[in-house]
Image 1 (cartoon, rainbow, N blue to C red):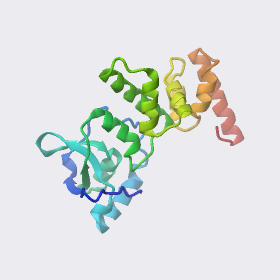
Image 2: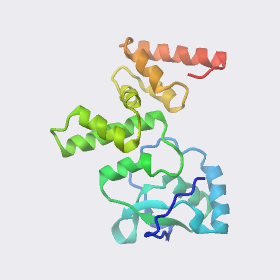
Image 3: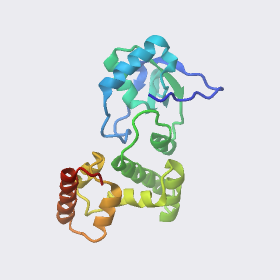
Image 4: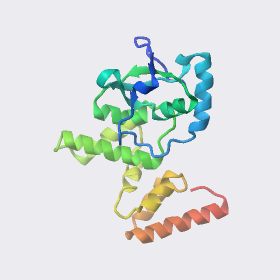
Amino acid sequence: MTKQPTPPYKKAALKPLDSFVIEDGFNIREDMGDIKTLAVQLKAAYAKDPYSIPAVRGHKGIGGTVVVTDGHRKIAAAKLAGLPELPYLPFSSDILERTVAMATQNAGKDLNEMERARLIERISFILKERNADITEKEVRDFCIASIGCSQSSYYNYRALLADNVSADVQELVAQGQVSSTVVRNLAKTIKEPQDLTNAVQALVAKVTTSGKTT
């Protein structure tokens, strides 16, 4: 568990678990990962020093609540562990800053490639909603700079959301069985969704049999 550094001018405050509000649809992650192991780690860390736990980040909600930006897994694991509270640090309420933070402020489970693709899609939507005249290049450059990906990775992620990429293929990417690079390269020449799905599944089966990774 990586400890999240606390800036010297901000000290974390302990907040009751029931004060944290999970905003429906905000968290881009579909897989929360191993919550049971994290729960054991948090329980042990809390017993030694609650402030050693990386702080949940969010902004003030109604009635003293905190709308969570970063810390969804931590909260779920803390509830499982029966902890009464977690450290909290304030974060911006701006939706663009909060969305970017899912990739940059995360102190827990990293985003997989499919989640990064959906993150970029959401950032793109917010930027275009705020500025109808923004160009695709400006969107691309903002995404690359804000979430720290390369230009090739950016286009790989965008390719995962193309019309010919089926939900089955996206699930294989999310599971780490095939990379976005492989899918993008195949999608350039295989335009029919079912044909692309068959090609990716055949490749995954071949790789699984040979014991090599994509």
